Length: 297
Image 1: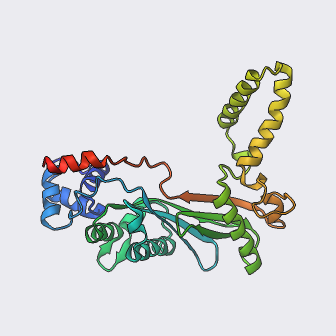
Image 2 (image 1 turned 120 degrees about the vertical axis):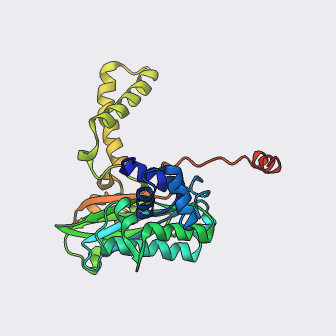
Image 3 (image 1 turned 60 degrees about the vertical axis):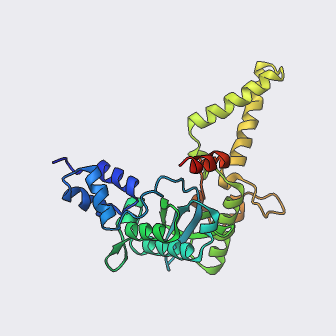
């Protein structure tokens, strides 16, 4: 009997689209035989989505939720294959419930969410599989981020109907005025896409990479070496201003104040930003080839 490892369960889940626990039980019953486990899941109707699970789910929405005391917030990216399905009310309600479950159960990882109870007798993983079978597209919970604030509060902002979501953690108390300010900063982060919170988060490698690019540009312009080093100081300061959230010019500022200045007397402690499909390589469909393949059987 093959050992039922986490990687084996993961492989079966990826091949069938079934829930993690269903995959584990199927492998146990078939003594670790992958193909027999697939057959078992198909026989039970659990692997109805097996043929859809290989298709790329690069669309979808980012769902957010905040606890009543504004001490905890989550972002969840729930993907579908097409934007059409992402606009489906059932898809949207499902995603909202996922965010509510994550907040209620203090869930931090996709694995924890998959195993969590969606409703009586059904895990989130099983519910996703059922939704795939019902709607007819592959879907998956791609990632989750939780922010828990010990010394301040959190607020969220959803942009373009959920195509982009942001959590901002602030110092201070969650008064109505402060929450409004935090949401304004989250909106700024959505629009300006900062890479870091502040200078302390910029790694030495990232900074040296930017310096090298700037140095080669200046050398190409024929600048003397001693002048290049002085110019680089200014260019790196500009890099911070463009890429660090607190150093960026606040998007609604009339007097060019930075986000840090706009936030006063509060301070921005952290932020998280999810954009749907970031990093997913979307499959380029060749329509003519697809039609030819169907004609040829």
